[in-house]
Length: 323
Ligand SMILES: NC(=O)c1ccc[n+]([C@@H]2O[C@H](COP(=O)([O-])OP(=O)(O)OC[C@H]3O[C@@H](n4cnc5c(N)ncnc54)[C@H](OP(=O)(O)O)[C@@H]3O)[C@@H](O)[C@H]2O)c1
Image 1 (cartoon, protein in one colour):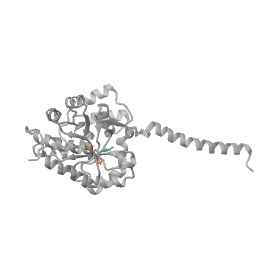
Image 2: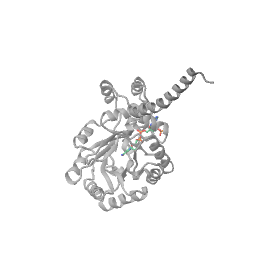
Image 3: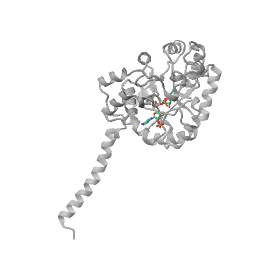
Image 4: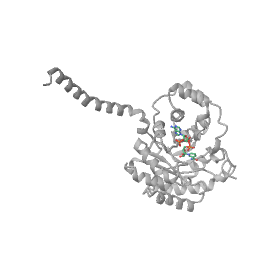
C-alpha cells in the first residue's frame, strides 16, 4: 500500500503538472514565444489592419509556393507578398485554400505588372489576378513600379500611364475587389503625381530598404503622407551575410543577421517582407522580440552603402539594366 507521504507527493506532482503546463502555455502566449511580431499589425490610412511582417515570395516557384504559404501560416504568418511578375500567384492561391486559416484572417498582396500603364490593361490585369489566385477579393494590390522594368531608373516617369493604372486600382478598391491599394518603387515625384491627380492616396509604398541601403528621405516623405513604407529585400537579397560589421552587431545581440536586419526595419517603422521557403528561416525571421539600442541603430543607419548585389546585380531593383 502506498505510504501517505508518497501519495501526497504523487498528488502534488500531478496537481503541479496540471497547473504548470497551462501556466507555461499562458506565459508563452503572453511572451509570444519570441514570435510577438506575428500578432501585431500596422493600420493603413483607410483603417485596414496589415500584419507587421509579410512573407516575400519572389523566386519561390509556383510549384513550391503553396507549401511555403501553408508552412508560413502554420508558423503564424498572416501576410503574404506576391506579384504578377513572380509567376506564382496561382500557387499562392492554392496555399491560401490549403492553409486551414479563414480567408479573412489573411492579408494577401499582389502587384500590378510594371509594364501595365493604361486603364484598360490595368482593369484586365486586376481581374486576371483575382482569377489566377481564385479569390473574391485581394487585400492589397500595388503598382509594381512607376516605370516598366526596361525603363527602370531612366528619366521618363510615365505619369499619365500611372494615373491610368491608378484609376483602375481606385475603381477596383471602390468596388470591393481590393481592400487597399498602393505603389512600389515610387519616388517622391511619382507619389506626388498620384496624390495630386487621384482621388485615393496610395496606402503603401513598397521600396528597397535595408541596412546599408536605406532611403531615409523617401521614407520620411512617404510617412509624412501617411503612406506605410514596406521594406523589400530587408536582408539585401542575402547579401548582408557578407557584411562583417553587421555580423558583429548581430552576434552582440545573439541573433542572426536576418533577425537584426528585420528588427532594424521595424524600428524605422517599416514593414519587412523577408523571403524564404524554409520553415526554420520563417521562424527565425519572426523571432525579433529584442531592441536594437539607439546607438547601434545609428551605427547601422550609417553602414557603408552596399556595392553590389552579387548574382542579383543585373536586376533593375538592384541597379541593373535589362537592356
Ligand atoms: N516591389 C519590388 O520591386 C520588390 C523587389 C524585390 C523584392 N520584393 C519583395 O521582398 C521580398 C524579399 O526580398 P528578396 O527576395 O530580394 O530578399 P531578402 O528577403 O532580402 O533575402 C532573401 C535571402 O535571405 C535568405 N534568408 C531569409 N531568411 C533567412 C534566415 N532566417 N536565415 C538564413 N537565410 C535567410 C534567403 O535564403 P533561403 O531562401 O535559403 O531561406 C534568401 O537567400 C521578395 O520576396 C518580394 O516579396 C519586392
